[in-house]
Amino acid sequence: MAWRLLLGSVWIAGISLVLYVDTLLHAAHSPVILILGIVISLRASHELTKLLQHQHINCSTTAKLATLLVAISPWIHHIWDAEFRLPDDSKSPFFSTFIALMAALMATFISRAKQFVKPGKTMIPLAADGFMIVYLGVPLAVIGLLRLQGPDLSPDASLLPLIATLVIIKGTDTGAYSFGKLIGKNKLAPILSPGKTIEGALGGIVFGVGGGLIVLYVIPQQVDSIPVSVSLSWIITAAIFTSVSGQIGDLAESLIKRDVQQKDSAPLMPGLGGVLDLLDSLLMAAPIAYFFWIIRW
Image 1: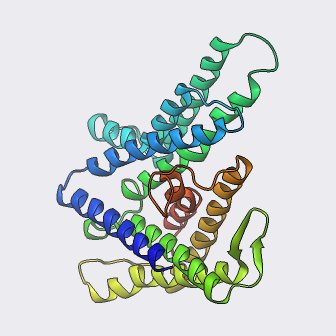
Image 2: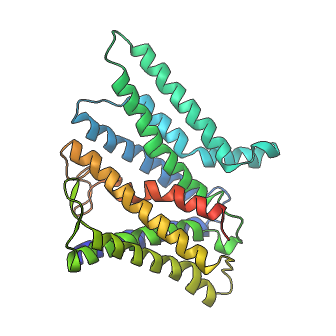
Image 3: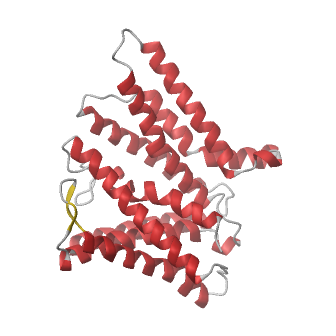
């Protein structure tokens, strides 16, 4: 447990440093996070490709590049709008992501069509390509939206949506692991993920809500330069749904790994696995978190 908590602390410190450097640059397009997003997208798509190859399913290079296109679409939208001033009806933060998603899917269809030789060999790899784009590209784009387009907060509070989401997810992971080890008895998904328990899942929600309250309620109360006008009920509700969706994301990746009989997505980091292992919860939680920031009360 101590090793896991130490690695988690290092992960949080690393992400915090990246966000701090990104803020220091005072750049409108968050170039540091953009570069990090490109690296993460390429690495995660590579790891997913390797996992699927254990079932003799090959994702195309086109799908990897298409996933990257969708992942960075918020930056494309942001830069394009700044340079050319998009019409009001196309200023929605989802506009570029939707267009990029459709372009990505069309590109994979064209790529597979060019490779078509005989019936019965196309649908499974084509579905895998589409799965990669939706499973990785769309959530990564939403993470970008949390940083770039997110809510209309003051400059001093512009990082809060992304930071709060990360803290809730990491708090959930820590709480689920700690409660599961200490008092976990009832298995949550005994075949899929034997180590997870119902008690751990509930503990994860408690820790996730606690992290959300610290970042969005306690700290803004003490720091005048971080004004955030959200209600206590909104914080608790958003944190609960973000925490639960993060745990579903964890189980979703466990399903993939269990099906291909692999413990980690890649042997990249001892004790943590690969980039996909770090992202699993965030991939499901980020869209839910962004939704709550849009409808906040």
